[in-house]
Image (cartoon, rainbow, N blue to C red; front, side, top):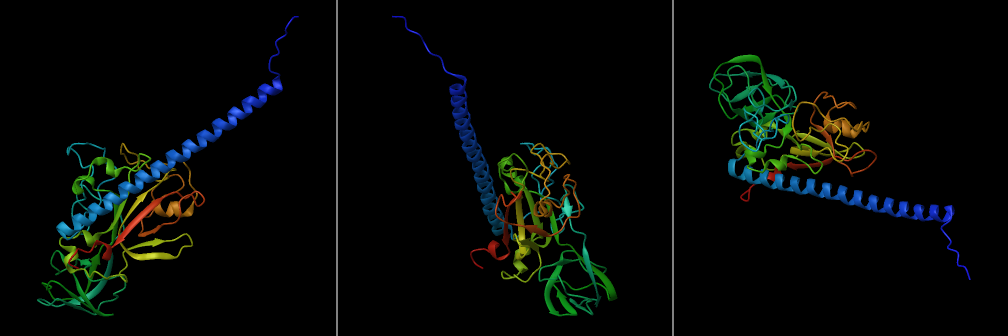
Amino acid sequence: MRLYSKGFSLLEISVVLLIIATFMGGMMMVFNQSLEQKQIDETNAKIAVIQKTLLDYRRAFNRIPCPADITQDMDATSSNNYGVEAANSGTCTGGAPASNFSIASSSFTGNTTNASATVTSVSSTAGLAIGTLVTGTGIPANTYIASIDSSTQITLNSNATATNSGITISYNTVVGGMVPTKTLRLPDEYGIDGWGRRIMYVVDVNVTANEAFAYMPVTDSSTNRITVNNASGTARITSAAYLLISYGKNGHGAYPRIGGITRLSNYISSDADELTNCHCTTAGISGTFSASFVQKPLFLGQFDDIVSYSTRSDLRSFSE
């Protein structure tokens, strides 16, 4: 008896290939989800270490550092300014290195009297707080607001050196750049998130001043520092002392690991909250920097930014 072998029909082969494709697709999805979660976990772990190190730094020096220049090339040595905090603590601008982003200084007017710390006829105390550094004609360097006496009067920690009527008194608020890893004595990698991009560090300049925490009240929840809104646009907090941002999987507006001035826009995000966090356009072009940011669940629409912050109270020492 002759035996005949029977091959697979085209239909059977198609079914087998479909099963294999479905299986492989499922495996790839699981792999991608696993990789993505690993990147999220790595980023969160690094941010937690940075926050702990900032707390330790504050306890050691009664201040936290300015941001570093986010455009500097990564260098494991100290031959450039990668990870080195900006000069001029208390403003974090005007030196080398300098913060990449800053809000234009604000001002008010008032009357000073020689050898007196009181400033009268203040045009507005809105936005001012104890510990705010101020500059103006006849006001010594490193002078800050010691008390807000009324809506038209403040007291400084130093006496004025001249009598002036209606002088302009300036103060700075918020700046941004990258995590100052070298200043914090962290490995360079702690400035890089799980997707290989730089972590943004935003800080109120007043908490970077020399001995800043010695004269700032622990409870200053009414002080306007950095605002973090939720998904509905309601403020979670308006008094964050600093904030850390990873621009997540899509990386829109992030700075690449290697450095340079060009922000990433390979993923064109039109999510309004992502654009708020990078203060940039859909093309990744930097716009007007501000002190407002958004923290909401990941993957809510296009949004995948990881945002963490701390307040003055969070940075208190054991004795406070």
